[in-house]
Image (tube, rainbow, N blue to C red; front, side):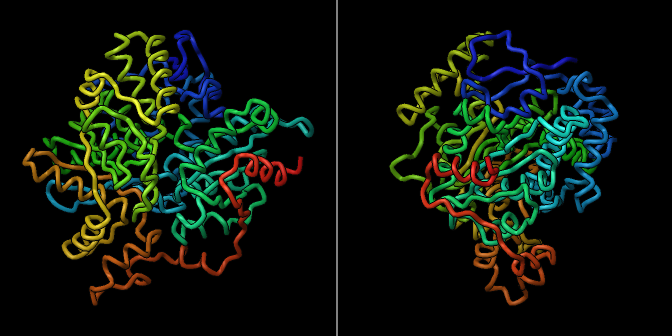
Length: 499
């Protein structure tokens, strides 16, 4: 199947961008996000065949359905996949762990930076290098280069840096909010010595950083001169790479519980991780439900309850124990809204869906909120549920899992686990796969708050890997940006690039 791509906000249904176009561009010129022209379907026979594959074999099969062989050959795609996942510490790449008969954890933190984002960003880094190497060949002058600019609330930054460090013809700039990420997350980003890596600590919030990145992408002149590329979850390649572990974990679980009714619970901030699950189900993965688990920055839970997608502008972003989810707007939710608009308001018309979605996004930008028609909300509820977990529940859940299972989870994972427990309490006879998105060592403050009262617990012994322990003694490279200013960030990029 030959797949092309289009923008969520375009009324031109004939758009036909290549996979390389959308990976290297990141964000559409009209401000929209890229979508595949169609979602490939997988039949029961294919699912049966896939169920016996290794993670890397399965990743190849999933990726192949979205990437035209004329763009990347089978041999090259297999090489990209093998290199991307050879860096993981677990042989299964993303193993599942049983907590109870109806609750399993999908451990996504076995990559180089101990976070789920490695699953996608190791692949994305290799993709950038592959496309640039092919374009440049043996050129000594006039080489095509890319300036990757991203915002992080913690884990995206280090995963992007580790995916792109040392890559030829790639410079990477990561913005993060000063004082709003954990010390280990900052150490992971700022101790990487590669000359192509730059960390910008911005005085402000994650949403400020994300807005600056979007403004940079919207500046046609700057974008053209410096060839700006995206690693945030707006980049389609990230959503695509994450689809694999939904299929893989489902197959792993069914080997233990062949007749299970499987539901996925996903700690959600920018909506990229759970969106990968949406695509997997639309392809044919027989998951029963997808459950959105939010912290107190709960725009997604509020939408699922009311149909109103609204910034909590007066309160602002609340700093919680799960900082990767501290957002006002979930960037990837736009992709889901496009499908919901197409299937209801636009009556299956792609071009009309682009028009409707564009109007909603304009309204959101100008007023801070948009309320969708009831049929759109009903469409979302056919697959999605949601729940909200606060700081107190987060701490209590970390403690409960340690006391009951002698197992330490991070605060984001705790939000998924607590949501799973709330759903299971309703007596729905389902088995939950809750996504464990980060290693607990990255969030020492809240983990210690939950567990320090236990005399048998030691953070250094039970949680902290030697690899992360060593970061504290390494030299840091940070450039401070003293206000959330797009002009100051642009100047910092220009200064670092030297032109």
